Length: 252
Image (cartoon, rainbow, N blue to C red; front, side, top):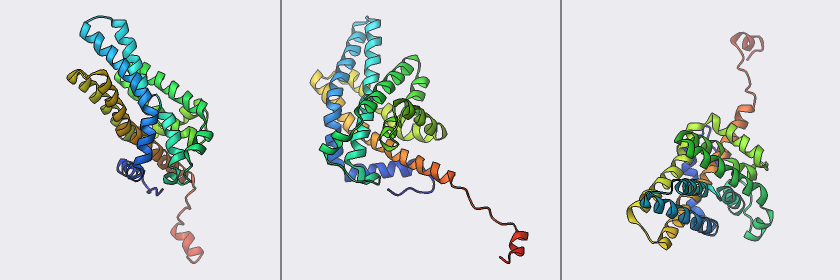
């Protein structure tokens, strides 16, 4: 994994998309296996919200359905990061594991913990307002990857994610938050416009997860490696440049 001197959105997205092209079959399999069941629940929540809006009532039901729908958009992203980091590890500087090896080694408790906490934080923030939701999502977006890359627990991974993204908030917002937000809004617009049968609604949610969420998870891991490299580079003390008098005294 080559890391340029300056981490830019173009470098991160370009590298992530290159990984997605090279490993498309296994990434698609991860997306279908992990997100198809979640997409079913997401479609149910979206349908309940749409039904409540059409009926013109049930404010509490609509609020609950919206909360659940937003939560389910994020649920599974940390587990996806765990599978991606292990099954296509060669792309991030270590060996690929087989599916059997990956399933035995994944820290399920920590990954599920990050998924649940992040989903609750982002859904709660989103119901308060757009800005709190965006802040919550962007700040915690690297937590699942940090569980794998730095072997952190749930709380430390979330805090570390906030610390890393705080210094590169605009970059994280652009390459991670924006694609997920666009996917979420496009899905809702299509649901309202097309009025799809439930099965097709489920298929649409599952397809969106494979096409958008999985590449975003690859981008999260790629961004994390870049930011850690930047951090390590900044921590290395730079050799001071000798002034002209010092050079003369030492015959340099």
